[in-house]
Length: 139
Ligand SMILES: [Zn+2]
Ligand SMILES: [Zn+2]
Image (tube, rainbow, N blue to C red; front, side):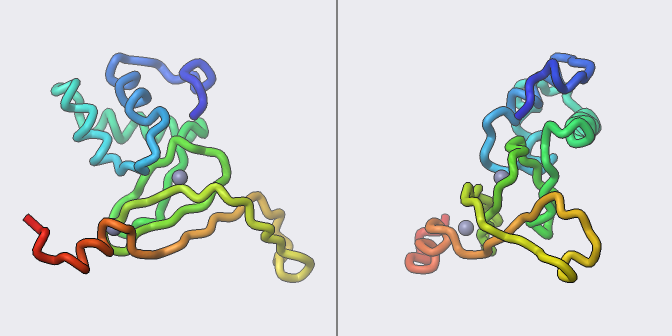
C-alpha cells in the first residue's frame, strides 16, 4: 500500500486508524468489516467515514476494489497486479502471486490497449472442506 504522504489525503485520527487497519491486511475486508474492526478503537467512527475514506483511497490508487465476492465489495491494499482464489462457501479470498503469461494478440484485442488482467479461481478452502467431513463440529 502506498504511504500516507503519497496519498495526499487530509488525515484525521479516524482516517489514520482506517489506513493502519488496511496496511498489510491480506483478508480483503469489506467496508463493513473495516467499520466493525476500527470502531472497536474509535466508537464514534461512522460508516460514512469508512466509506468516504475507502472511496478517496480508491481514487488515489491506495486500494483496489474487488468485485469477486458477489455479496459485497471487498478492498485490497495490495495494489500490485495479482490474482485471487475465493472460497465459494465462506467467501474467504486469498492472494495468488503467480505471473501468468496471458496475451491477447491481433483481432482478439478488439482494438483495446490492454492494461491488465485478473484471474479469479473458485474453490473450497481447507476449513470448509474440514467442516464437510466433520459437520458436527459446528457450534
Ligand atoms: Zn471456506
Ligand atoms: Zn489481493
